[in-house]
Image 1 (tube, rainbow, N blue to C red):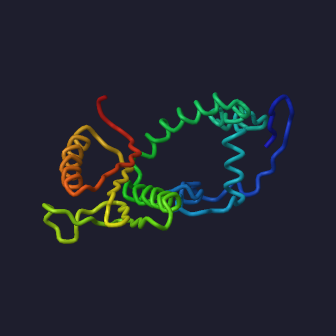
Image 2 (cartoon, rainbow, N blue to C red; image 1 turned 30 degrees about the vertical axis):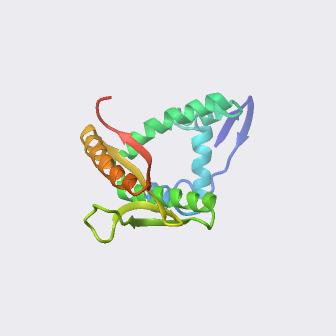
Image 3 (cartoon, helix red, strand yellow; image 1 turned 90 degrees about the vertical axis):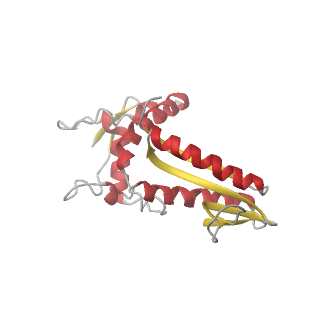
Length: 203
């Protein structure tokens, strides 16, 4: 494709496009199960990156609608690029709202768990999908948490959430959160929440 960028013309030769069949999230490596993996920059991803960045400046688009592929217009403009990415996140989150929330939740747990272990060091024990035994909690295995942090017999329970939610879900979880907090605080333990929500409902 021929690109006009900063008053200069460039040519980029596609390495993988066009492809046979549908180009979906799985092929691109941006579906839920792939996002946790360290994937190489292969030819098809490189082609798509070039399209997304420079598409609106292509001189020989031949009728293709690439006007929204306009990131190149913000290169070198930090504040404008930051604002553009934030706005696009809100737009994209509506599209991905129907994605498998469990898969996204597991990915978020892995990211948070790895971050905590790295920054807390070996003196802390960080466990994914752990449990904390509490007085007044009926299950012998303990109260489950997405992540449990333990040091010298003291605990922090961490809940990580990535989901499409509604007013009713927020109200239900708020009640649960208070009960869980009361039981944890009664034993001198702490509870924390890490949340990335796509919200659908009245503000």
